[in-house]
Length: 256
Image 1 (cartoon, rainbow, N blue to C red):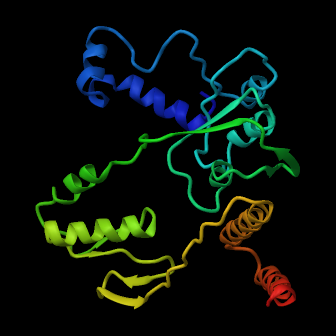
Image 2 (cartoon, rainbow, N blue to C red):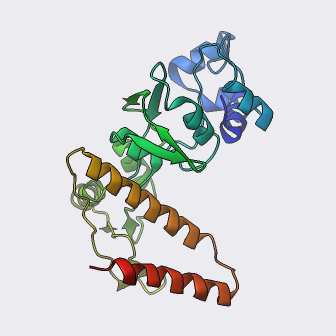
């Protein structure tokens, strides 16, 4: 396990076994069996321990984060293993559009990591049905468990069609007042008024080709720029104005 946060979370479960487990897992705990520990399990804590993983040729399973490959130690492991045909990259969980994980799952041939172009030659697999989030029934149990019905339920996490469908389900079957806003929507919680409604941005699926892979790189670059913009809040106004001018100049150059 090579993820500082995952290691800390594992320790919390270890210290609270009786409260955190149920069913068969709890039965194992009562029998003195630790469901989270087994022979061969190693925890990489320090940066040196993380780096050592990729210089140790012993076959291994590396569990790392972030899940969508946007940051963290996983990017180093991808750099060292994506190009190796004998390796398998197994994605567990949803990969959002625009993330490195999604690009790899969709079949991109080459990615850039730490300024270096890496060929994708490893076997790419997905393990479906696994999630750290509650499923539909779990969410319904939670939202209907309030003694006082919420004034408004916002469905904001998921694909547009899924959000809209779940909002409709809660509205029709459970009498909840729901709203599945698009990105950019502004809603005043105090007044209960919709101030601005965002517009849907459809994602068109294209056939896999060299052109589509290049377009995927362009989308990834755009996402990187957006992440940079979100992270410079507090930068001097002069620098932000200069940055904005440079972006607008680039847009003017390529605008069609």
